[in-house]
Image (cartoon, rainbow, N blue to C red; front, side):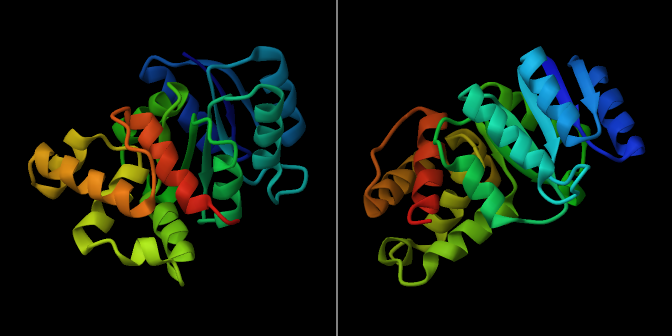
Length: 217
């Protein structure tokens, strides 16, 4: 699996390169600026891009804007964003086209190599990898005056948050220490209350939930 990595801090960039290579990824390019990222994504056509939000020369949202432009040129290009903070605008922009292959992780909440490499693989396969704090903020943004969300029980809300992170029914059941049958019942209730089409495909149902959370932006 070929990866284009964009990170301006040398030590972090070098560490990510070594980590990814140790887990079987091929580093097509490891760049430190927006213009370099734009060229690499256009010329190398990687399987996935791992991108820091803030890159030279602006040190604002250069990395994300380059990645979004690349996704417009190549719809569905998998992009995993790394950031220091939850930026709802960035998350919403990534989710806007509803095609999947997106992730948003907070740097200081990636606790081990397996968690990170699993997120890269999931995004490369067209899935999602969203940090729980991102989901919490998207949920909070929708809660005010949102009757469907208000109808969810506390357990259904827990299931919704885990579903939006990209977890399967089996993973949700293990996390909550309940049966898969119970999770299936909760997800059916959630989709009914939110007015969403029920799907057995993990990625489709995650995209449906994320599209709901992003609705009305």
